[in-house]
Image 1 (spheres, rainbow, N blue to C red):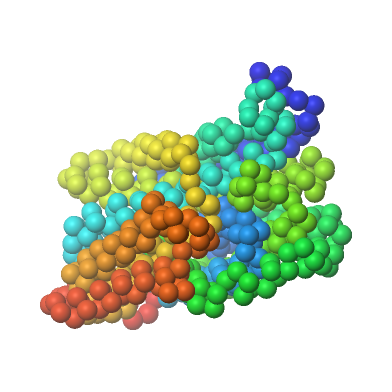
Image 2: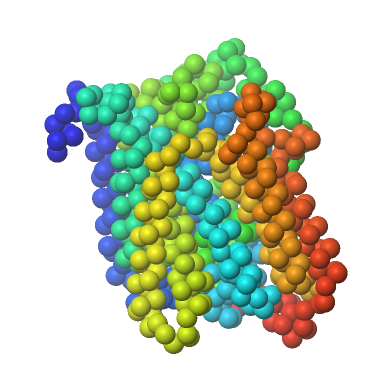
Length: 521
């Protein structure tokens, strides 16, 4: 109340609209929590009962983060139209391919043996508890930046549209990121705490619809404010022609190597968990077909808005390209109701990923560490659910604290995160299709991936040289993205060490080499 009392004459309507949306989300959380069946299976994988539509919306919502909306707009603002080809066009095809060749088989195996996490699968596949302990910190370490991407994107967006609303209360009168982070974490924590992945799936369905509709509306209104798509593009051609030509900012090898990054979806632990919620193999059909279409619907407007904003000379607030989308909405759309609605759509996209990731980490801490290290009958099902909830609260708190420290651009941080997951893709592919892969090969693949990833990440983000800082942009190795070397090193280590070591027992391999997948698993 004190904050509102000290607000300026700047209309607070956008914040009221955002607040109303968050209240709606809390209400949905209460309703869906009543569907909770009280079991750990229901809390962690929704009792494997999710149908085609809900699976599509939850999987798509989970893969669309601040990276897709806030990050892509900022990247296009800097590098132009070629950003669409970097991730969106290849993601549409690669994601669906991975869902088909990896997702359906993992669902069938998970249902057959009762798995709720990736690590349970890999421990059983390679008969190695130690492999699980190695994978656990790596997967958590790659998911946490993914979570940071969402919260940083939310903070940048709200700060951009709230400038001048609270003079004397916050710097520049804008709501700081730490306030937005508390609110977003609190809302997401509320509904996943109550209903687990089932609540997350229903919330994702709502939020996917919201951010897709508002994205289309935003694109239409921004284009109209700039005189139409033709006029906006003509203005960009006049002032920033370099942004309309891919070769100006993105080399051929860089462009091609980016196509390996979407393989990361094959190792996202939160996506694996969503796959396990499917009621049947047939439920995947809609996702495989429609997912690429949805990606185009979301990415094309975001890329064009970024390019047009640069062409129109709209400045990035404080030089922060993460805030370009919010700044463009605030500057061109003078209707505060519409500004609030569109900002709510951006937050919907961000929260549709955060919820699944929070539940995923809580599940991993519970199942892969505490329960795995204890006697089989030590905990009741109810106790396991409450442990999962406790870990989710701890994860949310830890991630929030990390958002208080300076971080790199959202797009760049996301690409590094995805590159790490992509480096693990040979492991999951071999575990499903190559009978000769061995436990030693799996260890070698993981360790080599981590070594290469850490080396390159250190040189680019943690301790860049003066030359690297001056160079700016994406880090390239021989003109290619780091993912090429991370993926190649991982795959070579897997194959070479597996061929040099004793093959696994046939009876073990037969459990996981599926000839085909029936509709019921």
